[in-house]
Length: 389
Image (cartoon, rainbow, N blue to C red; front, side, top):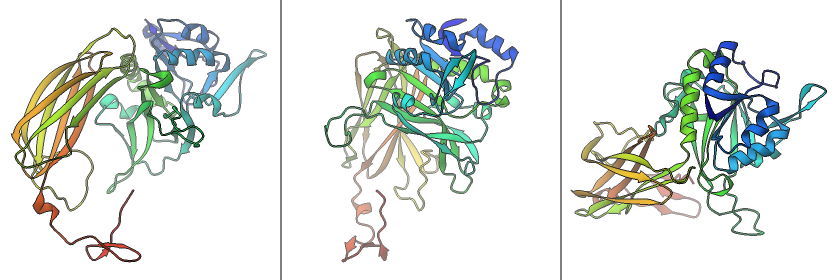
């Protein structure tokens, strides 16, 4: 049993979805510290608890809310499963657990302004996020059903007092590790039943949260959910590491040599832990810098791109911000270039980063007709010029 990972599950407590059966519960107790509602506050107050696995979704013991906040404000992890998180406080009365009406005040303390219902009718399939492949192979554990869209408010610093808003820094990065995708041919991303929040600043700095905003069904409990829980909890336990890949410029003159910048910083606890990362870089050049139809899938196919240079480097993630300059020893030509970075930590975490830059292409920029305007419209290509903001 890993006492640093605490699972909140209580068979007498309100629950949405299919409950784990007795054999699965026994397996959970062997792997984690499983606590009931009346013991949750005491357990989360312990300094050695690193990940809180909350299986009751919207329902939570009202008297334990202070302990939940304390745990998260230490930069520790959260895995919430079963619906919109922390929406229905529950209190104990006359030997029974009584749920209060839905409320927003609790999850707003976690920068979740609102959780809005999402209908599943446009969703044809569930697809994992390629850049953070945490849910790769686990899509089958989840069913297509109603979920929630989270309206997040992760900019908390008021740098414009009295101006009815904030333009301050974002305190978190937000990712969709599992996406609901519509039917062909568009295959639009229409929902994200699972949200990954990486808190980089503010009250919860360093903490990773995975929020699974729909109930679990039998497919989860019988299809390998135990292995999935272990992998997700371990990922959360590692805490936030920020990685950045940036070209020095968006455009280079032909003949220039491009330079890439890598930045790496570990923000999660404990503060003295250092983690080795291996970063594999690949630079590709488009065979044709124009396309007839946009396809923003970020898959660089051999028939469209030539790999012109590859390298590998290592960096150590710590509390200190680390920088690495990578010089591409090839003269830039006119056209579009893209860069991919596959980053793998010594703990097993995997990330994909990508960027792009241009070799200044005078001939491309002079193609076509000029943009003109009259009283009502901008014109190009024989018709009104459409733009999206």
